[in-house]
Image (tube, rainbow, N blue to C red):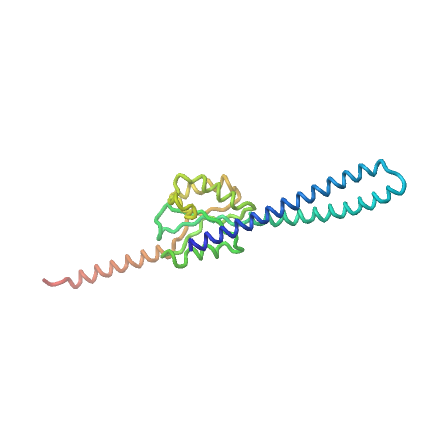
Length: 219
């Protein structure tokens, strides 16, 4: 899974870089046509006669080119901004990692729960519990800001793709309230599979103790 995460991150980074280059080129083209049009209009202001008609045609062509360049720049901007949108999720897994450990991650999937379910499939014994799923127009910035708050308690400082932090949920809730005030945060989670496992194991121990008491081993 770690290998897949690295590959996804690399692909996303390349796509963001490509879209940013496209945006910069479109903006350069728009600026160039705007300057050419401005110069043509300034020069036409001092011309009369037949040459003015030629300049008017040139101005019309430049206005068309500028409009097309502006449209391309707007499309490129929209696509570039879209790569920044996503969901920042905060999850925990008491049964797998103990109390006070949270994962703060990012996904761009249409349904962020797909990613959370995937994380809890086979690599851990219990499913993750969700404390927050936050939609953001600049999800990488929000994720980075939250990571920065808890950098001192990052569990793995060598592999930053391992986004687990030893943090109290009250502190995480406070950070979310400051960085994403509109987001909902849930401290009380079920940890259903873990708690049911503990309850069942407790019953098994109680039953074993009763059997041992009723039928003690004879020496």
